[in-house]
Length: 66
Image 1 (tube, rainbow, N blue to C red):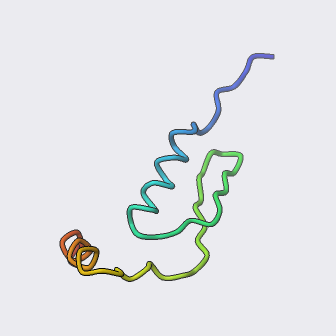
Image 2 (cartoon, rainbow, N blue to C red):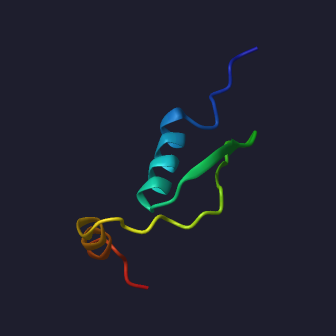
C-alpha cells in the first residue's frame, strides 16, 4: 500500500502558532483533524496590556485601524 502524503506539515502548525502570538494571543492548544485543518485554541484571556512606556508606544505604532 503506497504512503499518502500528510495533509499538513510542521511548518503549517508553526506558522499558525506564530501568527497567533504576533497578534498578541496566547495559544493554549492546537487541534488537527484528519483532513488537515489546523485549529488553534486560546484560554480566553485578553492580550496583555503593555507594562512600560516603550511597549505602550510599540503597541500603538503596530496597531491596525479598524
